[in-house]
Image (cartoon, rainbow, N blue to C red; front, side, top):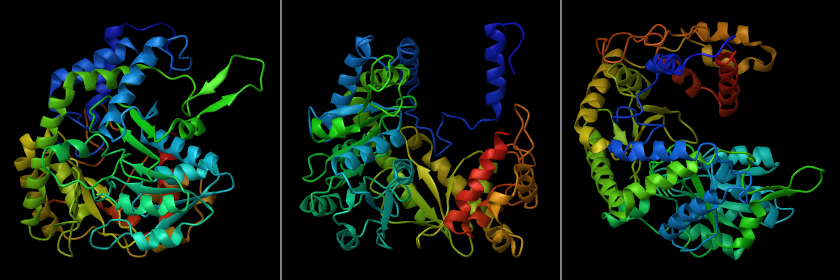
Length: 493
C-alpha cells in the first residue's frame, strides 16, 4: 500500500528486517538450495558495495554508460578464459534462464525453418520455457538409468534437419553429472546443428574442481562442435543475483542473439538481452566478486567444495535406507530413499531441525529424492549436516510414508483445473492441510508448523510439505504444472 506521506528510512529498514524473519537464512550453509555462500563475509560485502555503486547505471545504452562496457568486457573475458576459448564473444545476462533463452534464439535464427530443440530429460526447464516463448518444439531424449547421463544413441536418433539446437548439461542439476559433451557435440556438428552446453550451475565450478584434483570430462568451448555455453556467476561464482554469462564460439552466432528495431519514431532500440532497461548493479557485484576472490580464492573454494561433496556422499551411503543417485561430478548430490524412508518426510523432518533440503519429484524413471547443493561454506558444517540427515531419516522411518488421502491424486488428475477459480482451488489445497490463504506474521513459522529446531523429531508435521510433494509425485507432469500455476496465482492474490 502506498502511504500518504513518506516514511523514514530507519522505519522502512526495520520493516524489511521484520519481514525477512520468516525467510530461510541466506548464510551459514543450512539452506542447501537457492543460495550460494563462500563463508567469507568480506567477499559478499565487496559485492554488495559494488552492486550499490552501479545500481542506477542503465545497461540499455552502452554509449551513455561506458563503465558498464568496461566491466562487461572484463567479466565476459574472465569466463571465456576459464571455459576454453579466451576472447570468445559473450553477453552478460540476468541469469541462466535468460542466457538459455538467448542461446535458443540465436540457434533458431541461425537455422531458419528448424524448430526443434533436442535435449536430455534432465535438462533444465528453462529450455522448455524458451521453446514455449519462441514457438519451438522440445524433443526429449532419455538418460542412462544408472549414470543419469544423456543417451548418445538416443541423441543420434533424434537429430535431424529440423533440429535447431542440441543441448547437453555440465552438469545436469538433478543428479550433478556431466553429459557426454564430446560425443553429442560431434554428432551435432556432423549434421550442422549448433550444440549448447548448459553449464549454468557448473561453468564456474568444474574448472576449479578439476584443478583441485577431480576427474572432470571435457565440456567447454574447447570441445569441437560446442557452439555456445552458459555460466551463472551467481551460483558458484558467488556473485549477487542475477549474473550469468552466455559465450559463443564466434561473433556471428552472438549477433543472432541480439534484437534491434527501427520500426518506430523513438530512440534507437538495440538489445543484447531479453531486457531493455536493466540495472548494472548485478554486473558491478559480479565484477567485484571475481576481483575479490581471484584465482587462488576460487581454487581454495573448489578444494573445500570437493572435499565436502565427497564426505557428504560417503556419509549418506552409510545411512540405512538412503543412497546417492549416480556419481556426482559437481557439487550437487541427489539422495534417494527407500520403502522404509520417505524422502519427502525426511525433508520435513530436516526442516524441523533447522535445515532446508530440496525435494525433487520423480520423473522419467528417476526416483524422488532430496537435492543438496554443496558450496564453499558447507565443509565447516558437513558433519552436522550428516547428523541431521541421519536423524531425519530415522524419524521418517518411524513416521512412515506421507499419508496421501486415498483417491486424491486420481481426483485431482480428473479435475478441469481451468474451470476452478482461485478460491475453489484454495479450498482444494486446504483439504490436504495446506492453507494458501494464511499469511504468517513476521518471525513466526509457516501456519501450522513449528519453528525449525523446536519440534520433537518424529512427531506429526502438519501441514508440512511431505503430503503435498507426495500428491504431486503421483500426478503426471502436465497436471503438476497446472497445479503449480494455480498455487502461484493464489499466493499472490
